[in-house]
Length: 251
Length: 257
Image (cartoon, rainbow over all chains, first blue to last red):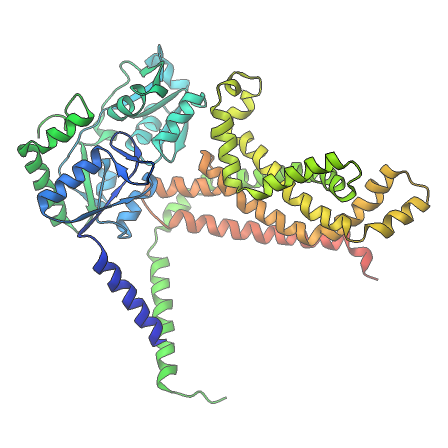
C-alpha cells in the first residue's frame, strides 16, 4: 500500500517537474489557424501567436493538441493551462472559463456552391462544427434547416464537397484561407449577405481561455497581446497568413 | 474471526475510505440535471442505437450462413477462397477503418456521387448499416463455420440416409443443429455489435455515443454525457444477455429431459 502511494506521489511530482511553464491547448484541424503537419507537429497562426506570447512573457510553452469538442474540458481537467484556438468570448463560456482580451475577431460566414442565395439557407442541410458559436447561430437563426454536427471543421468541409451537406457555416477567415482559396474549394463561395454578426451568438472577439480562477494568467496574456501588437510581431505573423488584419477593430 | 488491528489494517481501511469518498464527491459534483433535461433526445439516441444493432445483426446473420456453408464444405474451392478472403479482410481490419473508408473514402469519390447509389452512400445511416452488416457477417461466419464443422459428419450422414437432398440436408438439418451450437458465442457477437455502434457517433450520427459528445460539447463538460451513455450501454448489454439466455433456453430445450 505504501509503495502504491509512493509511486503515485512520484508520478505526480515527476510530471510536474518535466512539464513546460505553460501548456497550451490547440486544435490542429482548423487551417490556417491551426493544422497538423505530416510529422504530427502543429503549425499555424494560433501556434505562432502562442509562441510569440510565450516569448513576451518569458515562459516556456508546450502545445497540446486536443479535439475542439473536448478542449474546454481538457483545460478544466488541467491537461493544459490555456486555450489558444480562435475561441469566441461568449457569456456561456465565461461561466466556465476566464478569457484574456481578444486576440482576433472573426466574422461568421456560410459557404456553398457558387450562386447560392441567402433565402435558400432556411431549408438546407447545414454542416457546422460541434460546440461552436456557429452551431448556436445556425440553430438559432435557421430553426427549420437540417443541421449536422461535426467534430472538426475539416470534416464538415469534406462533406460539403461530397454533397452530404449544402452549406457549411463557420469563421469567414478560416473558410476563405482553409477552403475556398485551396484546390478543394473550387466552385464554392461565401454566400452573399449571410455574414451576419449577432453579439448574442458571436460574442466579442476571440480570446485566450484559462481556468476560471486564474485571472492573473489571463491578464498576463492580455498584456502580452498588447505588447506584440505594439512591437509589430503580431503584424509580422498576421501577414504570413492573411491579407487583412485578423485582430479586427482596435479595442 | 478476530480482526487484527495492526497498523497496515488501519492504513488499508483509511486508504479505501479516502478513495470511496473521492469517488462519491466526484459523482455528486457532476451536473446531472443536464442529463435529465436532455432525456427526450437521449431516448431518440437509444432508439437509433437499437435500430443500428438489430438491422446490422440481421443482415449480417443472413449473409453469414451461406458463407459459412461455403467455407465448411469447400466443395467449390474458388468460391470458398473468395469467402475466406472476405472474412480475412473484414476481421483483419478495424471496424472504424472500414466505416471511414465507406463514409469518407467511397463517399468522397466523384463517380460515387454521380452514381445511382449516391442516395444510399450520401446518408450516414446506410453507410454504417452497410459497414456494420458486412463486419458482423464476417465475425458471425467464423462462429457459424466453427459450429458447422464441429459435429457435422454424423448429422449429415443421418439426414442423407433418410433420403434428403444435399440442399435439404444442409439447410434443414446441418444449419439448424449448428445454430444451436453457435448460440453461446453468437451472444457475444451481439454484444460486440451493439458496442460497435458507437462508431456511428464519429460520422455525425446522434446515437448514444454521438449524443454523449453533443451533450459534452454543448455544456462544456467531460463526464456527464459519457457516464450517462455508459449506463445506457450497460442496460442494453444486460438486455442482450437476457435475450440470448432466452434464445438458448428456447433452442436448447431439447437437451433437457
